[in-house]
Image (cartoon, rainbow over all chains, first blue to last red):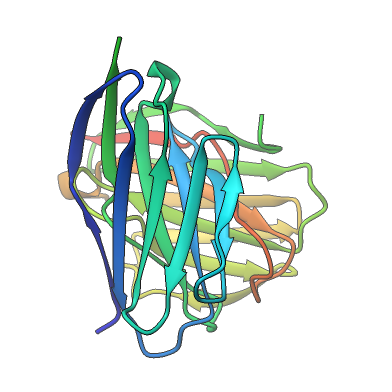
Length: 110
Length: 114
């Protein structure tokens, strides 16, 4: 059975901290891995990763994929209260399906 | 604003009611999706439409009935639901079903079944 597992389930940090969110997967037909941020309702796209070892970066957020070990990490440096959200990892199965993890809830306090 | 609009934002219904959720996308995309998000569970894909044709029905009970009259509109018709169907229902669109980019999600419709 295809599955995506995220850890930790929740994380509480102070502003300025650096956090690392993990996503591991076991799927039959991998095409890409995507990260989304869900603040209130609508998840918004962060990154799409298809190749191992190539870091994607957007401001304080960065992500990398390891296709050998079947995982990805999402790093957020110098966290701000606006980073508080649920971060979703999803794997594109190359069959018009995205399989999502349960998400990591990040809370950043001042 | 993601370009995907869902109505209503909140819906409370009894188990014998019939209601519908509506989704409209203004992005010119060819594919639309319904996802269900329950507490502490991953987003679950329900239905996929490509150019108004259903290409995926992910073992969803028949009490959920999708309709896609054109590539910009998607409905989810609800009848004789169960309390466990209470969840956030998210609509999404993409350029095409063979993902080359990301999904664009609506704000969701929070459904409560009494």
